[in-house]
Length: 325
Image (spheres, helix red, strand yellow):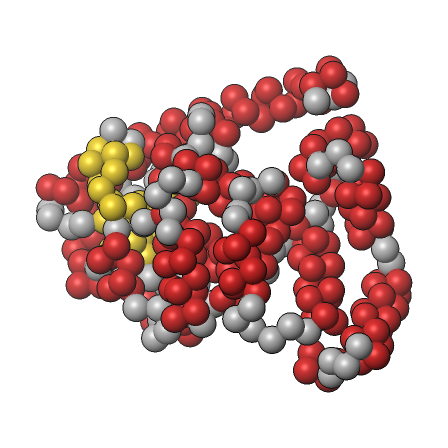
């Protein structure tokens, strides 16, 4: 692939990697201090998202950019944890909302930042928005958490199956797939790292129990389709069979997901589109043509395609009105 990238592109990639590696080293120093302080005050914590994944599943911590530290805490420890964070010199960043709003309406407390604003610390009450708390008991996550060493400290992380559930929910429910290629790589590396131990049947069971089988299906499909995640075909089929098969809905969702994931690609330098994107999609000409087609369709063309999908679905016997058309 490097042969097709111009020298300026290679220099950009190198500088981006070095910047990420330096930023992550700073972030892990802060994480060490936090975990030491929490341990001293007997406050258990589960390290979430990038800080856990960069160290445990990526071949190099500098490959996974991140801007914050996410820690899941027991609700009864939140007040003590906030005092500890303040004692360490961090202060609440109320640019977006008040501390009261975060505590009452959000799944993590108000973000805390150091004096240089180089990162953000988010103390989570849960991993999902409040509307989903009743369907996904946080106690389940704690019961299945695993011991691990992150930032050279003994701590807890989510089980591999819960890592996939968390990432899938974050991609689909919180960020609506918008520019979330990085998270698809998270899934690919989680699957690659824990492949021998991943219990796909249990993952599917949890998704059905929590009512998030469609979220999980489309995120796993996207990870498999766009970054080559080694998702077993049986896992996708068993998830797909749980909810009704509606061709128009599936066509539209896949088109929208693709569009959302690559939303900024039309502004990328030509060498990225020509060299990197085909690597993500595979070398098949049809895959590259599909990428180019979906990225540059006009809004009117998109509406026409959706209408054609609904019409074709009705011809095949499915009721397009199930999608709200």
